[in-house]
Image 1 (spheres, rainbow, N blue to C red):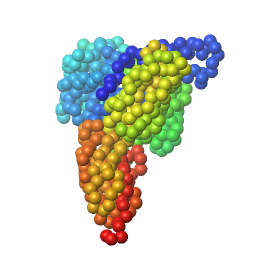
Image 2 (tube, helix red, strand yellow):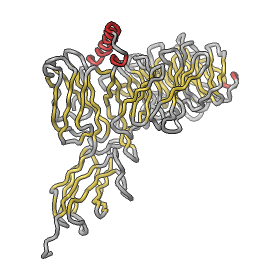
Image 3 (cartoon, helix red, strand yellow):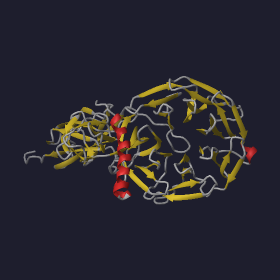
Length: 534
């Protein structure tokens, strides 16, 4: 496996971008010409389901150490940290963590469900040492939101009220009824005014540290995730009832609402987060969306249109996101990825990669004659070069076989070693089914192998079918790279002459084969006509 090393060069792109912006202003280049481009890097295949909270978002936070921290699902009382290079470290907590935030004291603070009769706020140092602070016993259930506030405070919302905890562990809280609210729902953020903004059934609440609270009527009760924008307003993901009806909301500090459409999305929208570029970033089915504070939307599609971005957070160099890899009908795994600014171009042909088949990478925009390092997610680059030399125009072409990797989104990074320029190509690994021999008569034995199939929690059972007539030939279990070998079957007795399809699929085929991208692989056997003497 080839690691994504030498990541320092990616950080150079921010400086290159800033310089490019200054040059654009000096030369009078239009903003459209000077606009920063972004690429999607698939960092880590997790083979587990990431936690989904009430905001349909992965529990994510940018830690005080600059790394990304997240809560995995079904992994017990743990919080994970992932570095820019993709190294994951897991830390044990006291109880089940929920929402996360970076505290003003250089630690992680999180909501904590410690049992059925009481709840707590947790604190973890970046070395993994955790402490908990209990809330009142009658506040049953986990706190619903948490955010770092001013004056060394960490604010939280819960079903029964709001409060804050100081970095020394002192808890101050108020019942929801004290400011005219029956209960709270959870989404919250600290505004540019230093106040806590949060959702409740009657609308939007704003409370100062002294618990002077104001309620605002909300035209969008469906707000599910909140973030403080670079313009000082609170931004939220809103309702998404149908295609072209999704919207993002903006709440000014005086309680005024503005809504911006997110076209072409059927929803739902995931978490929203402010980026280092001053824009808002959010996830959606099959794509990642960037929205400026003026409402301009740019979508970055994922190769697997069935994948769903469940959360997004600002990292040290780009926007990190969590992605659930889906086939047409079931979970196929989960990944962490990153949206990064790019300064060069990298294109893949084809964009759907079948392990073992030839692919071509074409790069341009690099420095003349420089060495370009190629980094691949998973093992897709096992048979491809890790280094290439750009020609006098800063371009290169690489051709080779795609390496083994399970079904789903994958990526290639090209990093110029003298220019620091980055190009990214994101591809979809699709299954490949191989039969041997490729022809035979009724009753002859055929051997089947496969690669690139989905990996669900580390393994998957693939159904093998003969399609004409439809006959289930058996099942196989793929390994962690989505591979299997050595399955045999006899050509069915009533198979007609000519090319006939063999399919490997996750699904029980009661009807037709699901349409792509579906995690299915196929191959063809040429059934020979019977001789006249038979």
